[in-house]
Image 1 (cartoon, one colour):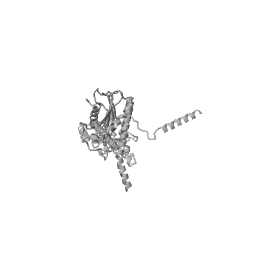
Image 2 (cartoon, helix red, strand yellow):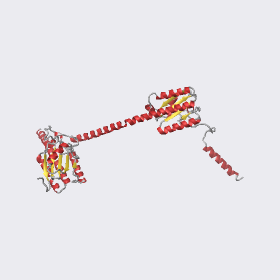
Image 3 (cartoon, chains in turn yellow, brown):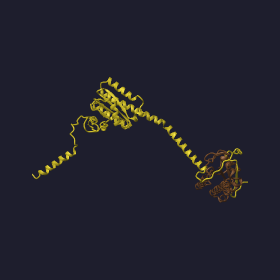
Image 4 (cartoon, chains in turn orange, cyan):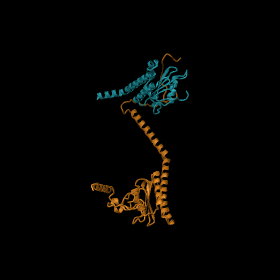
Length: 274
Length: 163
């Protein structure tokens, strides 16, 4: 019996330690096949669908945390292998170009249009960076796309409309929603990447011109400053110099424009000229 | 006379054997100081070794009119530059002025100024001789400019006292 007391104390202590180490929430269901975007109370990737309803602050109600893997798919419209591939592709694209492309596919958008949802998500996820959000509402079978302001400046007009039209056309012709979603995302990514590359090429093309303009302006500035200082000295504004008075020009002598040949010649040393 | 030689606006040693780097720097410093005293002017020094029989005076005239020794190219009465050409072959030196300085320096003045070269040059102290010449030229020009300003000052003074 004397040995049983320390064993009990030890058991209680371990139980308390385990209890304190666990998060103060209900245990999650077994995570076996659940993808990270499944709606659940824990952020960051899976809480976006529940967050608006749960947030009490009206300003925070609209905020949805950006998914870490660039894809939000609470209705499992994408099959897991394709989803994993697409996530890897988007992550690689982000690393390569810095452009973040998100796909958000919802079974229902309730009263919101895909475009409105896309704009709202984009303002929270991409903000001032390069990238965009493609939203799909399964109930209306419509797409919405929104890109950040920095991205829209590089995009040619009508390119986003083209993405939407192609995606919806594909949706009509194909029954494989997962494939269409993947194609639409890749299409948006391609448009953004092409626009960025074209923008970079244009900037590179004008770089020599810009450098030349800067060099010319700098040279002009330096010459101007030098001339100004020289004139200030000539006018003896610093009070340290002397100024010659210019007289009317004489006719040049012996064709000399700078000197008329007024001079003095001396010989020095032992050696003398004949 | 051939092609225009490579020259600097302050000092040039085309023989590359007469002046040391320190000499060049000391002459250049004095020339720059001269330029600060007289911003419209420039005292340029050119060491050379002409072919035998060549006149240093003709060479100086050609060089003066072929090259622009002032920062801003000035011609006729706008040219207040001085050029000192020293020919080591004939051991002679020529001090020449631009049109603008003809109202301030006469040939006699120039002969006197060129004479300041001789004591140092006879001891082969070329840099010291050139510096002495620049110094004497600056002093003479300063005196001349002060003289030209003084009658006006005197007249003003008389006018003031008469009032």
